[in-house]
Length: 399
Ligand code: FEO
Image (cartoon, rainbow, N blue to C red; front, top):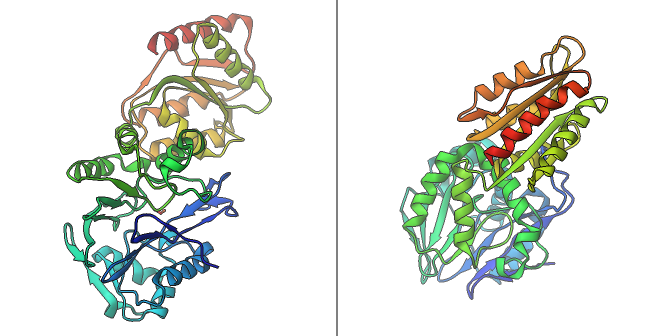
């Protein structure tokens, strides 16, 4: 049975949410699910803007057919060809074989890579700033390469100032009937997930996000309709400001995140002692993660959020404990930069963790090693307390 909502008088939400998916991209855990947003515009011509993931395609098709109410479908605009948004294209084409599929050259290359159906007769290729009139609504296409894939574009509806932004400005988290920013408690329910979504999905492409933000400055944007999460019908400067910070790798807050990799609790103990000493100094924003336990995506989000990062980790097989190596390499892959970093290594024999952690940190941009690098043999002893106190002092003074 269909389940739609109106975005404006003639623009309808036809997407759906999935709370059953364990991991987005089979990587990032989804405690609150995810939504796949899609929109229908009814005018002299009709258009669908992006489709949805396979998991909710049945609901999506019902929603589109209900919204069209017997009318033909003239256009599918494909802003993004990643399968979480394109699985409904062929299904819609089977029902509306004359529709035009609107995309750019790369869109169609990817479409042919994913699907075995010849849709070439239906292609309508567009370029930057091309426009399509649906009647009262006019769609203008804005290229947004690498936000998040090379083919990505955004569609700006000129008559109402609505930006259909593809992945940008989206968030993890299913929708709960409320689809608009001003219908949800965004700060409590979605902000952390918006950060986790951005940093893990698009975090690597800060320069490309900057390019899109510059293009957005030239548009009169009254509403943003992303492909995941609530529609921005208010407070657009708030999310623009966050995107400005995230895409320039600027910390949102002065604070300390301690990431520890510990096998028998000794490195964990050092981490808690460090945290307590920071708290004694009055530091309020302290976050701690056991790298073995936490899905990397949550740690990445806080690494983007805070100014100071501490990595405390054991050596392993003359190398680095694997979950910590994964985390650091992920931070590097996502281009994280401009952070103050402190290192604590531990080991009983062949102590190697600090060497490898430092090599990875040194290969990243604008990462400042703060304080002395501390080597611990097996467990913290009274004579090591000074080195921890000195590090606390350095971190405290840098905040
Ligand atoms: Fe939501 Fe890049 O796909």
